[in-house]
Image (cartoon, rainbow, N blue to C red; front, side, top):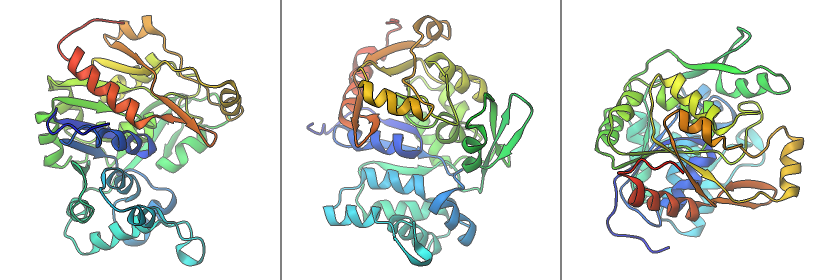
Length: 331
């Protein structure tokens, strides 16, 4: 896909694999991209560095930098390399690289900026806050769970539902650059990614939801293709949207982009054994929430996983921006 030399100012908000996948497609057709990334992770290699070094978790931020990087294949493999033994077992070189830069910097966002410069990324990556925050979930049975890495594990195998999520401490200040980017955006994209643990922590950071709510940009939510075991079992499209609106207290987008490509039966069966299924798009309920639906074939699969196709997703987002940014036609 040929890169356009000009285009909309795009702000994407989220974290995890979904966001970095989308960024790989966007960088091939746009240049003015700002990724606003969660820093609430407390598990895996990121959680270890957070605990050992007292720094924000680097993993989601590093994935986004890597997705936007313009590097040689060897550097790409180096950043993704994970040690297989010793005290560094399971840790990625990219995380350690960012941790080293953090040790050389006054703030985490400064370290992120330095890594972005070294890798000559398209656009920029911003941690949503420099503060140390943890994610907590309140379940419908009154149970409270603290820690992003524990929420899904606690919910798995039960019929509990997440009533709301919150940050601890509450209302951490967003980076001023985050708010400025949202205010200047022509298009704001939420997701794709884990509803409660990748998207919501950004929106619960002080100032972010307010900035998105007041924006007159083209605001779109990229619906996950599959439900997620431990977070959104049984959720329809309207359930996802309602969760964003109720947890943030704001109507944060006007459009929802949903996949319409059929998922192969063997993959549906595989995901079904793991408690996941394609998200049902309940169009009437979505329209009741004041959100327009955009259907597009944006799914891809391989190695046993269903993901968004980065190029197809980028193409459809930009098409939607050009064709629908000033309309209210429900599909």
